[in-house]
Image 1 (tube, rainbow, N blue to C red):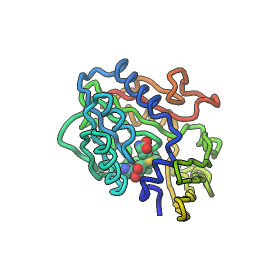
Image 2: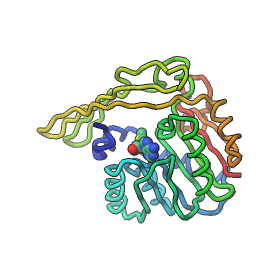
Image 3: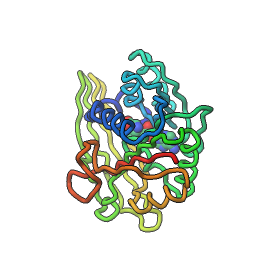
Length: 258
Ligand SMILES: C[S@@+](CC[C@H](N)C(=O)[O-])C[C@H]1O[C@@H](n2cnc3c(N)ncnc32)[C@H](O)[C@@H]1O
């Protein structure tokens, strides 16, 4: 079982995010760093499509894919309800392809951390480079690298969100393992409790994700031969650099296609 099979509850659980702030961030990075005048955006591992829909409202030509058919089915409905003409499809970020290019790609809320093996990262970056215009950006939001050392999440790991009659309680880092020293992989067993009017049920998940170090990512970028790092942040607030302070709780990297 996975919350990714319950997109309507996923949207409630992760509804705490400031979508406007995150999309302002994307627009600002494009304005400052992009060398492409193509106002199109590809949302990689797009989930329920919240960001691409908001970027569509801001005038971007938007597309996205996700490995979960349920997430894509829901994202399609949501885009339609919002009057956004988005191209959405089911695909894997390690093997995806699409016959066009984009001015910007995004991969938010730690989707990149689902790339578990070295060869997957290499293949993924190769494929993103193929679908980006020269000078286009790839914006990635990852777990903060300090988690490699602390063996703890850098953010609140359990929370409750309520929308109308629905309450979703999440314990994302239940039974979180230490970072494996050789693979850099962490395992967790997230528990999501849903109360929807008279119906109550529990989604028991098993997750594997990889913690990336900053220098490791720099090396992948270098080896790709296709990207350069143009900025890094510790949150979506523009004044939060990537560092070891408490306010820096994500690793957000802005790559540009050479
Ligand atoms: C934490 S969610 C983030 C979704 C979305 N980016 C957001 O900000 O709400 C991670 C997403 O990654 C997707 N995913 C996991 N592995 C994937 C893969 N190999 N290729 C494409 N999508 C993948 C999951 O189905 C899920 O929708």
